[in-house]
Every structure is written in structure tokens, then in C-alpha cells.
Image (cartoon, rainbow, N blue to C red):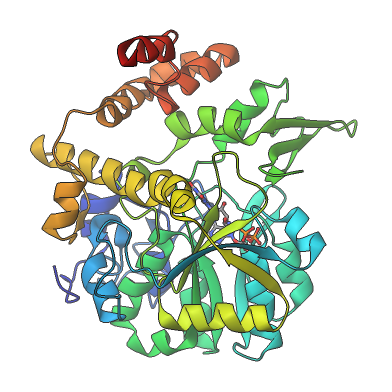
Length: 442
Ligand SMILES: Cc1cc2nc3c(=O)[nH]c(=O)nc-3n(C[C@H](O)[C@H](O)[C@H](O)COP(=O)(O)OP(=O)(O)OC[C@H]3O[C@@H](n4cnc5c(N)ncnc54)[C@H](O)[C@@H]3O)c2cc1C
């Protein structure tokens, strides 16, 4: 796989990516189109083309990360350390930290490092503007800003597909400016693919802050989550955010009477992930966001309100250190055990392994799948191909996602939640599983 991609128009993009369920909704196709012919109307929508505007210029297909991307070649080109563990991606250092501003830290998804870094980039004059994702009327909205108040108000993760590049690429083409942004792995891969065609834009991205990414969910997951706490969303409630309140936070709804109803993070993930995650997320091995300068994530497994920070480039490490010296954030080293528990088991290796395993299964069955260029050592250590509980869990989830079965389940919120928990935590949540495991070990 090289950087020279096949040219192809929207018809091919639709046939090879959108129709087979490989679209990430990153917005690269819409953003690269010089005629504004492609639109992603909302974060739940797929790209559509206005045939009267399309000139078949052939830019949309090569800019699409849904078909996969040469992640190893790209990270090597950006100076990945030679001794890096091939399943961790490029690592210059791993820390845990938080924003020194207590209000940012309290409102943030994790420890507020993303918000603190964006504010620092503006204050230090490293960038002209930053790109943030705000939540407006329950919908994620992409905004360029040089106002720290807007950056601070955009704090928190939006677990929906956000067509970031639909806004970012045309805005930068129209008025080039130095920016920093936060991005999920597919958004960042879309940036790299699109800027292969528009290389001039690359110099304007001063800092790419990647977010660990397990999954995103379409916003109809909120209706299903609401139904388990007697909230009729969107008809009779507004949605405030996915990570409100003390760490790790709750999905929060407010009824017309002003009553606040909440569903804690892990129980809502049980419902959202198996049933409302776009299929392409299940085929993504890049949860650790290898293409960023700095990757940020949660300390799950009993963690506190701190952000895990991986410096993926020397430049990212320098900006992080400068932000600490300026007093906007602080961080400390992680022990090897912490790294293994939160970083490796938590996301980098688990997502890599599950993603590659499912891709291998799709390929064996002749089904559409994205292509990546991971080294044979990674494939081997990811245990490909294998019939593991991870694969079985994916196949079971896919069976239940059949529209008829899912519609039936949605009429039974308690069952939806119970089954979601079994599927998301398969096989550990199965009744008797822990007892059986203990007996076997004994
Ligand atoms: C869709 C998604 C899935 C994630 N999955 C995991 C996971 O499985 N495991 C894990 O450890 N961490 C995951 N994260 C990362 C985690 O939720 C935090 O975003 C990260 O730890 C940074 O926290 P923070 O407190 O430093 O960020 P904050 O200071 O709260 O700032 C978050 C920043 O992210 C931006 N942002 C929010 N949503 C999006 C979006 N959809 N696209 C682009 N930018 C956005 C906001 O504009 C804001 O600037 C995910 C994040 C997202 C958005």
C-alpha cells in the first residue's frame, strides 16, 4: 500500500466504501470535493452526492480512510522510534496528567489535558485558531476558534461520528491558518489521505491531538439509553452530554420539568456499543491513534479524573513539556503495570487485536474490509486468524443488529440493556462465568 491512491469518483466511493458499511463519516470526501457536491447532513448521515455538481474529478475515493490506510508507512515517515513495541505504535513517552485549572479538569472527559493543550497553543501563539467539537442542541458541531472561552466550553468527549473534515478542509483551503485540533483515528487518517492530494495544507496542522477511540455511536443510541431510565428522547427531554458529573461521568438528560436523569458511563456503553456502533468501528485496529502527535485517553479500570498521554512524535512531546512549564497542565510517569492495564490492555493492543481479527474473518469470507499495512510481527502478535471470544462477540452483536431483531429489542429496554451487557462484556458477564473460571483455576 502506498500514498498514491487510485483515483475514483463518488460512484466508486459509494460502491466500495459507503454501501458495504465501511464509511467512518469523517467528512474527508465532502471536505475535499472542490465543488461542494458531497454532503454529510448530520453525524448520523452517510455522504450523499448532488449529481448536478459532481464533475467526476476523482478526489473523493482516494481521500477516504474507510477503505483503510498505510498507518505503518505514515508513522515511519513521521519518525517513529525504531525500538517501539510494534503493537503499541510510536511511543516517545507515556504519562498520566491533568489540567491545572480545576474547572476544566472537573468538566473534562478525563483530566482536561486536551482543553489545556488547545488553550496553551493559542496563548503561546503556536497557532492562529484551534478546531473544537461543541455540543449544540444535542448535536456535535465543529468550530474554528481563537477564543479560550469557546475551547473551554467545548470540553468533553462527543461519542458520535463527527464529520470533522467536511468543515476543516474547505475552511483551510479558503483561509489557510495554523491550527491545532483533536481527532479520532479515522478523522486523522482522513486528514492524511486528503492532504496527500492537498499537501500544502499539511504545514498548517501544528499539533494533532489524537483521542483513543473504542467506538462511536449513532445518536439513536441516546433514545435507547433514555428508554432505560424512563426518558423519552428526543421528544420529551434534552441531552446535555455523555460524560457529565464526577469521573467517569454519566450521560445526562433533562426533562421539560427540569428534572435531571442520568445513566452512568459503563451501563450506557453496554447499550450503545453493541447495537449502535457503525460497523466500520468494529473493523478498526487503530484505537491508539498512531498518526497523532499526542494521543489522549482515559484511565479506565478504577481510574481517576486524569488523562493518559502518549507522545507519538518528538514535536508532541516538546509541546506537552512547554505547556507544563507554562503551568497549564501537569503530568507524571506511569508505572509499567499502569501502562499495561490502561494503555495496552485497555486500548492499543485490544483494539488492534480485535480489529485485525475481524478484518481477517471478513477477508476469509470474501466480505468487504479495510486494508492496513501492519507489519507481519503485529499480525502475528495479534493472533490472526483465531476463533476467539472477541470474534464470537462481534458475530453475535451483528446477528442482533438485524433491523427486525433490534426494533423488537428496543421495545424491551430492560432486555436491551441486559443483552447489551452480555454482548459488550462477552464472555465475562455471562451468569456463572466467573465462578466457572475460578473453579477451573482452582
Ligand atoms: C468518540 C470517542 C471515543 C473514545 N473512546 C475512548 C476509549 O475507548 N478509551 C479511552 O481511553 N478513551 C477514549 N476516548 C478519549 C476520551 O474520552 C477523552 O477524550 C480523552 O481522554 C481526553 O480527555 P481530556 O479530559 O483530556 O479531554 P477534554 O479536555 O475533555 O477535551 C476533549 C476535546 O475533544 C474534542 N472532541 C470531543 N469529541 C470529539 C470528537 N468526536 N471528534 C473530535 N474531537 C472531539 C473536544 O472539542 C475537546 O476539545 C474517546 C473519545 C472520543 C471522542
